[in-house]
Image (cartoon, rainbow, N blue to C red; front, side):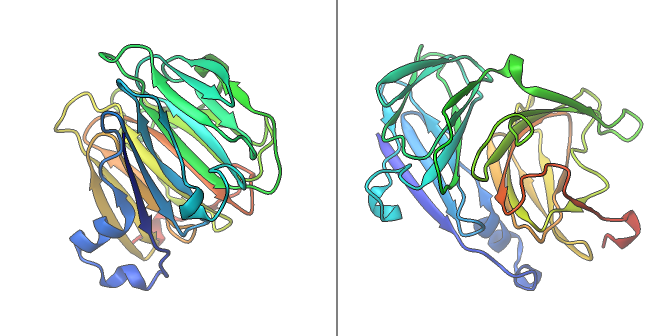
Length: 281
């Protein structure tokens, strides 16, 4: 088993004004998430979120970060969200096994000592996208089947943003310390995931884009201050860090899906500051 643990630092709005394309990608993009029998994680100093991919093929995989985090075990002071975007698999959580169908999610509370990931079939392996945030108390573990996700249709075809937001880990239906996590699917013919853009200064966010039907599909993710926007071009199954002070929106060359995850001071999903189109630069 190979384990990768990268670090991304926090930035002020003035910092990114001076970054070229390569530097912007080095600071905000996670380019390789799902690799066979590997755990690939990124630690961002933006609210100390950890996010990445666990891809078991022939091996059982477990995240071990005791030394990196100065703890006895990974979730000693953290909570964990999981969404499976691959084939069927399993989680073994402190000895108890939970089947994970495609698109299933799971919440693991603080204090769980062992989370082991596995695939049912190496030819169609599970792909577990994971997000962990600091926690102050334990909330119950919870299986989150896709069929039970809170579906919120948004947008319309005229504005090319018809989509459904599936809320897995959301304060309206379950308790967590600060983690929120969900899955957005754009309809065929739609390409904008959010426009007009907004910010939510009370929490940061990561986006992981996937479900690209064509290998040449690209999504252009926009970030930065409203009057100083930048963009990063993403391929399939790549993720980007979005600071709390930054706008976040994206447009693709065709429809796609993405997993969003947030953490910070406020868990109110609709707590956001809309940006008038006239202010974008």
